[in-house]
Structure formats: C-alpha cells, structure tokens
Image (cartoon, rainbow, N blue to C red; front, side):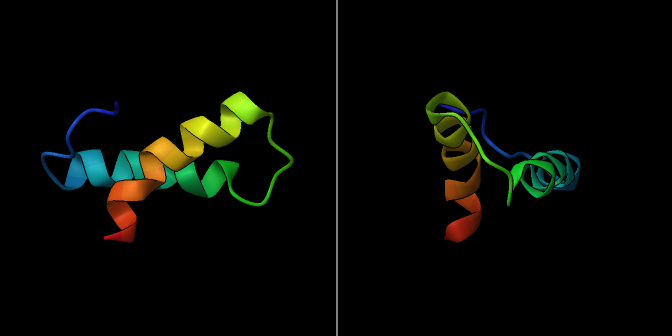
Length: 43
C-alpha cells in the first residue's frame, strides 16, 4: 500500500511518477505499481 499523500509536495511527486509511466508499455509489476499510486487521484 502506498504512503498517504500528506501535502501538495507528496501529490506533486506521485503525479510526476504517474505522468512519466503513463502511456508506456509496462510489465505487470509496473502496471500494478502505477495503479497503486494512481487510485487515490481517481477519487
């Protein structure tokens, strides 16, 4: 389970990771990692 996003710095960091990974061919583990970090932003 990813860490709780506590402030805008955490949000900016996870958004940057998502932006870098999105749209690329990912392994199953990478896709799981991306989904685990993206789900809080879907809310």
